[in-house]
Image (cartoon, rainbow, N blue to C red; front, side, top):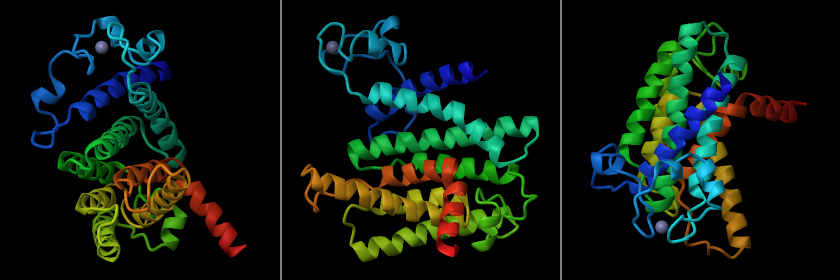
Amino acid sequence: MWLLLLVLGLAAGSFLNVVSLRYDPNRFLFARPVIGGRSRCIHCGTTLRWFELIPLISFVLQRGKCRRCKARLTLQYPVVELLSGLIFVFVPLRLSSLFYILHSTFYILSALWILALLTLLTAALIDFRLRIIPDECNALLVLAGAGVALLTPVADGAGGSLLHSYGILMFASQNIWLNKLLGFLAGGLGLLALLAVTRGRGMGFGDVKLAAALGALFGWPDIAVLVGMSFVFGAAAGILSVAARRKTLKSALPFGPFLGLAAAFMFFAGFEFVGWYLRVLVG
Ligand SMILES: [Zn+2]
């Protein structure tokens, strides 16, 4: 079962690589020129054979080079395939540790969170390459959020918050739909305010839309922790890249990937992190 999930995840990752590397802002994300057609080497243009398209394995066997022109292939290929594989395996594990869920609901809820995290990975890759976050990604996140609101158990009184009782401390409503609506507003308005304060340095309206969509997916108060974490990650990366003299303070990194990273952190470790934080703060 887990092996099957891993293989599915690797294959999905190879699809995400194609979408994120071929995406053109003037086209729909899933337009035929983006997702259709045979895969080619981006350096020499040769059509790839089936044995050159096996996730991870082809890359390792070819030592990261095109078989014909010997050009070095981007590390994005194996890294994204592996990340996607891990998402497929660890999302169901995490959900089963967070909630007591009946079988059929569990499968659909797992699929929704997998879809959401893969969407975020795609958005992050496109933001890195083009400094754009496609609206299609935001729409998918909101749709996944509606499904999550419909299926997440709310018996703990925290309205679907992944933080459970800590969520109640942070004013989660018992109504999951109200939490998702509040999250949408808090994410969007919060980043809009920060955009105004920072005057757009390293941040753009695309990040405002992504934060609103993440708010609809995670709900209140999880989105507040998520946005806070994204700033911690962003600041840490900023300091590191300036220290490494790779960037000056002015050539800021795109912010979308940090929102995506914080979302993954929130999903996989948010509950434990907030618990630890409160213990340090109170004790
Ligand atoms: Zn080539």
